[in-house]
Image (cartoon, rainbow, N blue to C red; front, side):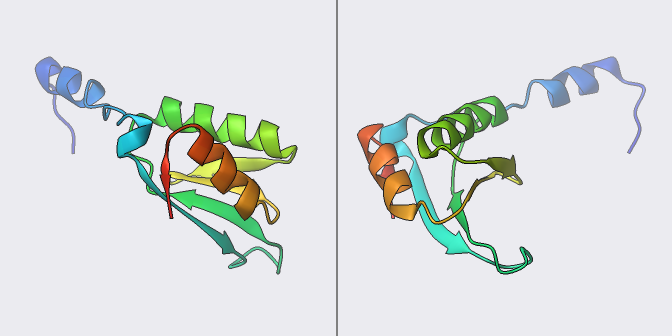
Length: 98
């Protein structure tokens, strides 16, 4: 869709989602191997908020686990089986984890 209305563009740019506090977040952590050549990744999904905050959380988790990963489609992917460590780290930050 294309519009020449400059007000419409301002509305679209400022629609960034507000990040919920950690106590209100309900994150799901699971191990995944689909489409990864049999390699395991720890996937954190369910984060509600701004993409910059998701990137920051992902970077912190990758640093604490000492491994690589990425943030894609609203999910944090940590390379390897770090499910227990990620659960502990997120609980220390007051996130609700399942």
